[in-house]
Image: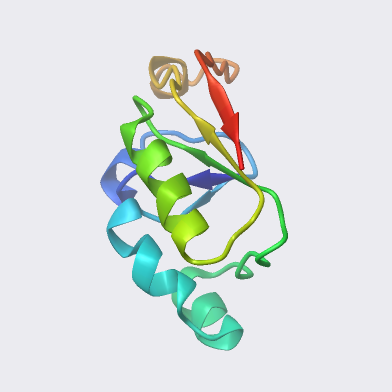
Length: 104
C-alpha cells in the first residue's frame, strides 16, 4: 500500500504498514534500478506484476498515481478514491472510506 501524499502530510498519520512515495517523485522513481529505488526510498521497488494500492487524502493523487503506474507498465493497481484522513490525525483506529475502487 503506497501513500502518495507529500512527506509533510504523511507524517501526520498513515495506514500501518503503508509506505510513502509522493506523487511528485513517483514517475521518476519507477524508472530507478531496484537497488537505487531501495536506497532512495527505504523499501523494495514494487514488481510490475505486483498489486499496488495507492491512497491519498481525497483520491485525486491516487488516481493520477494509478495512471502513472499503468503508463510505466505496472499491470495490477488499485486506486482508492476517498481516504478519511481525519481518523489518522486523531490517532484513532484507521478507517478507510472508499467511494470507488478501480482495479487495473
